[in-house]
Image 1 (cartoon, rainbow, N blue to C red):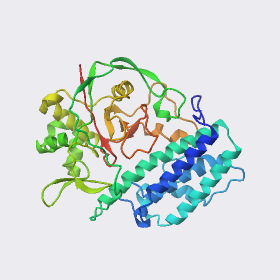
Image 2 (cartoon, one colour):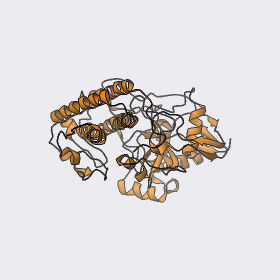
Image 3 (cartoon, helix red, strand yellow):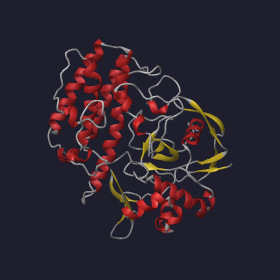
Image 4 (cartoon, helix red, strand yellow):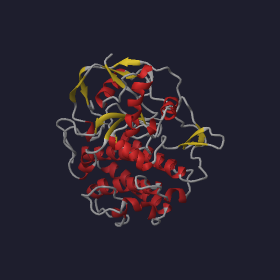
Length: 412
């Protein structure tokens, strides 16, 4: 299952501590939720919180305990089907759009199962410290971190579909706003090294490390704000086909899209945005979020011709973004922790890419079509899960994730 670059970055004791911290964080995320909150599924792309808790437990049971534990037995063999996501090599799967119908097992039993698997992983790691096992546990931790973010975005979408507009966070965790004036910064041109560097954990789609050619370009010092997006709306940007890709225009018309997801008006005609903090007044200085690739691309086309300081604007390539991030890590340019940033790069394999072997080979490679790359991380991204080489990806219409944009342009 391992490739030559897949080695654990931590000792067994360090990984065990990270494992327990990650598992606790998942449980903490549902602390203020009811069993009913954890059961519901608001759309096919989203999953119930209970399913996320169960799926990451399934991952440890099937990927790690089954091949490594002596006298392995399933907690419940039927869970191998119920909580499989997309791993065809494992076997059958419960239909994605019917995950919300899984009223059994109960949340209580899922949490009991989680504890059983945690105890067994701990016992296994105290006996076996092989490179392959340590690496798989490290992969499991990163996998659970991905689902922690999905759990939050899926709860936000669920609560948005409730007329009560429930509040998840009482305080804290809001995406901070900035009043920084916009500036073009010189990008890194010429041949640049792209991809993960060093021995730290990374997903297979982050390598192999290779050279890419960036033409001379500039890149924005900050993310596009709600205030700028409001200009786009008020100028008729959602009603003017000139700014939209053909597929984007068709999507816009079919779905009747007129603003970012979660935007709306109150009885006083004030702009509001729903978040995990509830239905709040729109913060004009915060970065725009919950937009699709179609919307990000249309905004760049509109801004390039309608805002003087954004003349010639476009979306950056993922290679421009990565080179910029490497050279600006010490600066405050909203690279991480606010919104994922759409790029103009299709999600495709790097030169020389090979997926992981075994079941883990289904993790990233088979999705390398009809998706676009996002870079950075969001306010919902789990602690320690951000890195420069990380390649997130979603289809062009997706916008229930914390997705925004920064701009680039050709030339200096």
